[in-house]
Image (cartoon, rainbow, N blue to C red; front, side, top):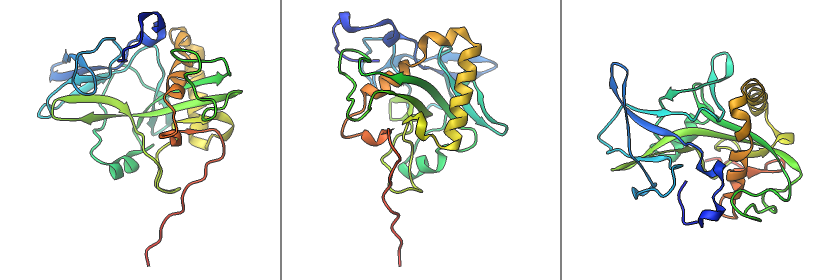
Length: 236
């Protein structure tokens, strides 16, 4: 997490461990990479998701934070995944469409009932016209790597939908409108949290963080109502 917010506004959950990025050297050896901002600057807070790794270097491995919930779409259905993982590298928009919710995808999942008084950093940082309160929201973010010449970033697949068949997300959705796969993800998230007390203190934090990032430019990332998509264009 980066930014220039006064120290008094920083709460413990904002400084939670984020994704650690390593280079695998073989024989079980992993070298932790130096964190940075998404543009390669030095971080002020420990929650950064980027590291200084030249594009020429491969074998990148990401360590998932232990206190958050991650689920892999395995052959037997959604199941928890922990520890070190390999993530796909995003190379373009249509590649993202093809990899979205495919077998082997690793997802971060969180859930929270949002009230009008809820906030992430400061009062009213959640726009309740875009994220209406009084409902439980499910966050599902599919993990991937973005690579530049010097910086590698762990992030979520996000894209404005072109039509019903060519879309990603929304990543934040009311649980009363969940499609079948996300219903299974919600059930698996609940099972994991109920059986692991180390994750219970962080439940809902990612929902609040994501809700606070929603604005009129990226409101397609949240769905609080039955979704309407543009019709696909058919070529003659």
